[in-house]
Amino acid sequence: MKRRLPVLWLLLPVLLLGGLHAAGAPPATLAFLSMDNMGMDPRYDYLEGIIRAVLLFDLSGQEDVRVVNRADLESILREQELQMSTLAEEQNTAIEVGRVLGADFLLRGEYVFLGQDVLVTVRLLEVATARTLTFSERGSTENMLHALAEQIVSRLSGRDVVLQSEEHERSILSLKDESPGAIALHSNLIDAEIYLDGEFVGYTTGDFRVPFEMGNLSPGPHHVRIHLQHFGVVKEPEITFHDWEEEIDVEPGKRHVVRSQVTHFNTILYDLRRLLWEDIRLRDIPDGGAARNEWDVSFVDREGLSVPVSLSTAVRKEGARIEVTAELTYQGGAQAFVLKSEDDEKAMVQEIGKVELEIELDRDEVSFRVSRTDIRQNMFY
Image (tube, rainbow, N blue to C red; front, side):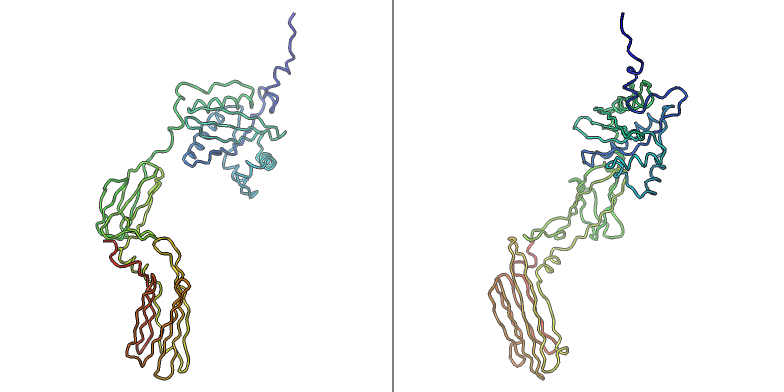
């Protein structure tokens, strides 16, 4: 005669987590805490919403399972000054929040994109006992998530449910929001050519307040380039000349505003060439006094090498007599220069290495100029 197993032994897999809900028993209350992208690739963040939505739909549709309202959970977190990430990391805190919510179970999950499919893992935590049960499914369709929900419902209620079906074989990897986005390009240039992903699409408006609109763009990276002869950007330190361009990661349904500040190459070169432009007003120097200054005008040359340069100056005033002294130190070597008001020549220009020193004395002021000689106007031709 066959020996009968005790009924308790047969029910043990169910009783391990919360027990079987008898007919007429109140529904098991479940709080869905989080679903985290453990792969850390933001391109698959959209799966979090899909996974959560399918599981919540399945669980909320069961009479013997009650899902805590998300707004209630967030309200408790605000009151306790907690973040969702805290509940994922600290089990005791999560259990305490579950008690405040009146939840019997807490559900939190994570997923990893594996190239062709997704591995989803959920952990069901019983608030009363702190015991945890883990479920995992791997696949690429909605049915993979429905199979996960079937396991959870079975543990919560003791019932076997069928949530999978042929119509749920749609891939969750193809459900990413693909609604088109747009780029609004503002530019100060008049009639510059605009290229989108290498294709000509139009001309800049010339009014910085009025953008050129590029719409109906698929989500993802798009390359925008503006071309106008002798206008663009200069790359340092090599000093090479390029069109303005930018990579824009277009988000679904979003209009991205992009502003290009494009300048004539000569304007950029003019600013890069000037290392020091200072004027000393003679009327600011008391009679019998002197104005002394020191400037560090070091720079990085076109080969990427540091060029240490400094200038020390003194302007002395004795009645109508003015004496200007200057010492330029270039890569450790110093050269001194003197200008006097009684001299016939009241200006000097001296080239030293890759810089040029210019001093000019007139009746109102003294001008000091230090410029780079490895950069010149119109060098882009």
